[in-house]
Image 1 (cartoon, rainbow, N blue to C red):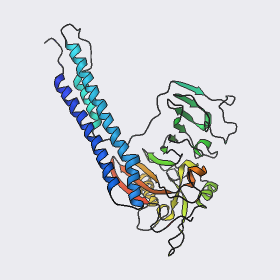
Image 2: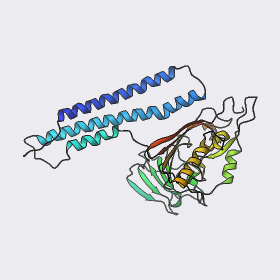
Image 3: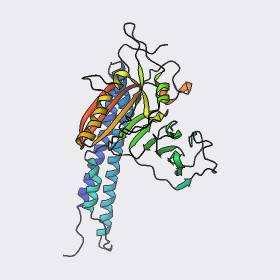
Image 4: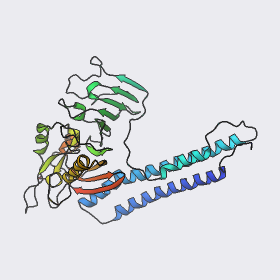
Length: 367
C-alpha cells in the first residue's frame, strides 16, 4: 500500500468545535454561579468563606479550564490543516507525527488530574549575584530583591538566599530556597507577594498580594523530627491580637501555628506560620483538627510506610484586629486567617477533606 493514512480531518475539526462549545458552556456556568452566589441572602463567616473561595479559587480555575479547552480546539484545527496540506497531491509526504497521536495528546488533559507541583516560569537569562554585585544583600540577614527593581524574565542565583525567577514585568514569581536550618533564610522571613516558594525540595508555598501564605502543597510527605524550632518567632506571633469573647466566654487564644508541622519538615521562618485558634492547632480528643491530621501523616509514614500528599488552603477574612491591614503596613503573620481547608490524598485517593473555621462563633476582635 502506498500513500499516507491519517485521521478524518473533517471529523477532527468537528471534535475541535465541540471542545470549543464545551469551553463556552464552562464560561457561562461560571457566570451563572457567580450571579447565584451574589443573589443568595446568606451572611456570616461561612458565607464569606464560600464566596471568597469561589472568587479566588474555583471561578478562576473554571475560567482557566475553559481557556485550556479553547487552546486544545485550536490545536486540533491546526493539526487537521497540517494533515490536509501534507496529503495534497502536490505536497511531498513529510515524516509527520500521526494526527491520531496529536489528537490523544490534545484531549488527554480532559481526564481528572491530581494536584501537580508548580514550576518556575521560563526566563531568558541567568544572573549570579556574588557578594560584590550591586544587587547583593548588604547583610546576611537582609533579604534579596525586596523593594528592588529587577530585570524581567531573569533567573537570579543568590547563594544561600536562593534562586529567584522573575516574570515579564520583573516581579519575582517563583523562589527556590532552603530554610529551617541553624541560620534562618531572610527570604523566607520576608516574602514577595503573589509568588510560589519551593522550599527544601519538599514543600510549595504560595503567597497572596500582601505576601501572606495562602496555599501549601507537599507532593510527598516526609517525617523529619529534627527540624529547628524558633521560640522567639513563635512567641512574637502568639502574643498578640487575641479575640475577645462574646461577653459570655473567655477571650479566644491564638497560637503561632505551623502551616507545615515541624515534624513533617516544616521550617521555622515566618512563611511557615499563621495565627491559629488553639482549637484548630492543638490536640483535642475525638475532634479532627490540624494536629490530628499531622499525627495521621506522621504515624502513617513512620509506622505503616504510607505515601501521602498534603494540601492546605488558607482563607484570609476581612475582619482583622485593630491596627492590622495594608494601610498599616502589617506583617503577613499579623493577620488572622478566617479558615483553613486541609486535604490529604493517599495513592491518589482523597482521605481527608476538612474545613476548619478560625474565627469562633460569637467572638470579635477588640476595637
